[in-house]
Length: 398
Image 1 (cartoon, rainbow, N blue to C red):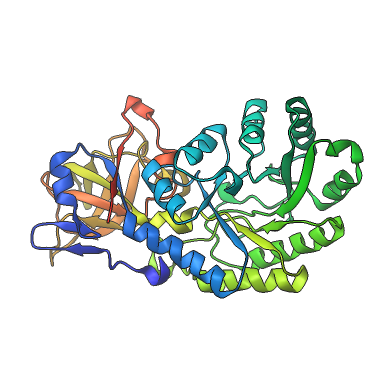
Image 2: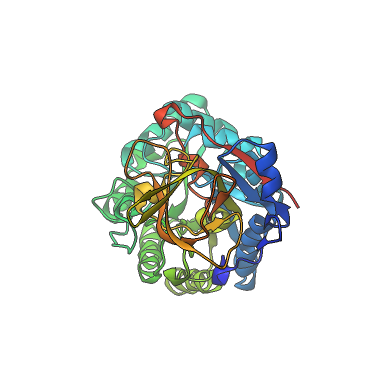
């Protein structure tokens, strides 16, 4: 999504194209609402990220965050490009392996790993458990001893920083459930009883999602580096997490990948030295490759309010309702004349709205809408609320 690139979207005389695929043709074949993912955009996003790590001469492992998008075709494409996986459940671990992502490229985060999930991770030989509490560290050790295997772990460090993002997706302060404070990490390292059948291989930090200002990111990574030095242990990697924001609208001002990777590299070299860097991008890789397609059911006029009611609802795509998130909305056809439009769904909630006062052509029941940048936290957060079926997904291959 560098510089708000929309080159893969275009109107023809009788169709709307995404990466040269006609959405009008898909509408004729498949029931709406549904998601589509562009392989071309997905590949461009991943290779751009990888290229910048190589420019900075980093030994980097990019672990795509499955919580943002767990579509099998998406994951298979990323696996072929060399991606690892950042997972937060046993289900995501199985999906990553099914897609062809190697176990030794998988990091397992999350505060509530169950015994079964820990056991599965150990048996599969994952790259690292990102440990979120001392109690979890003890449990991993006990399970590893029982299995007569060794487990690789990294502390998830809580740097106690405030970030500029929505309160529901901020994760790096002491009042949040995530991560361990430095003093507790240092005490754990010194406690020899905790280290049966487990090996400390890294330090991880993740402070939130949709980050558009890098000041807090730099501060968090610096704090992680200083903590890593105090550990005084030969670590294999520092995991800088994910969360890099995207430009959902032009004025968002999300940092470009070049700036972000350079900042990460410079900060680690200055405050720790040469070491492998693990990244956990999700949104930045998959958001702009995804589009949510929904058909117009009917229109409604309420004095000066013009509503377009579509067949997709907040159960299908919840970000606008949950986070008051902005997403660009395209109509299925272009017109020089537009009208201020509220795009709403059929769910019995006032929050079931995808956009207000959007300048769109006067739509009819023959038309449909395309909501952009829904490849992250779209389908993965969908539900069957109001007993509605979950939307289908389609992969637009090159």
